[in-house]
Image 1 (cartoon, rainbow, N blue to C red):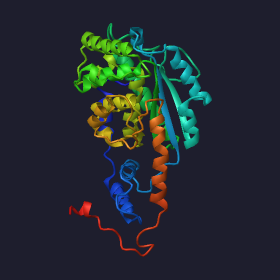
Image 2: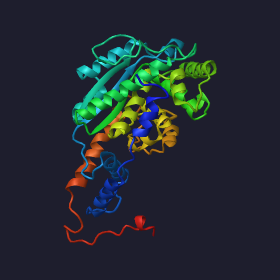
Image 3: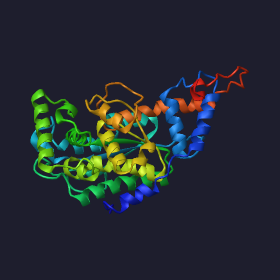
Image 4: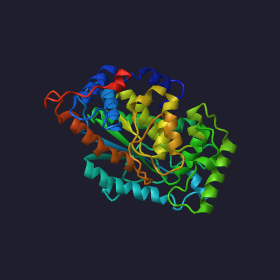
Length: 358
């Protein structure tokens, strides 16, 4: 069991900074490739970041995983969603059969999908690391107990350890949980000290009246529970969800075990921010993917100091945005590994005025 003051502090101590020599070697390789300097923009930056994480300029992206944390949220009692909790279990099992959007994307990109039940309200065929059968309704009290939050975080860390031992090179994050844009908005309002109306969207197609109920539920949850914005675990316990807790563990585990972890959309971005608030050094192990259509995602990305590569107004969730980044990384890696240098084609190399400070 992860303990609030014990193991989180141990995780902080064990996170190593990225390998700057590997990053420098990767940057040098990019600058030698026979194309205009920095012309692949953020893709070059991401590969340099990955080189530092993998501690080698010989970047590996062959074995990819998507981890989807599945959980239910008691706040759906407040009418904050268009569908009921039963949809969580239905979609979660569709991950296993391939009958979901992200499962199809995983097949096309050569990504292995791992759905994890970290707190669904019912039992399914999905891998169980269940903390409880859904959270409590946070308008009436804390969403979860401290030990439950720690158990869900530990489940995420454990999943990363399993994938690292199975020689995966990169992990994308996803989630499934009806009501989880409500919990994410609540946590964002507390972390960023924003009014709930500023950070709350319609999620999966709410009406205007539904949006007002959602904002009201978030306001009430914050008023009832008074989460401490300086204590990320307190915020998670009081107005968060088990899926966010599990993903927080995945981001912490990525830093602990030295593997890049990709943010998907709003929910996983909030989990990334929670992890960074717990252990700031894990930020260097987190990669952005896309800018989702949720109103608060830009605020969260700015708080993480991350700039997404894809801006396609996506808001599907499940890890779809994170998996969409993989083909772009593969294309960049192909150029990085395969393209000849200026010396090879006997053309004078570009001068790097940017690095030279000119």
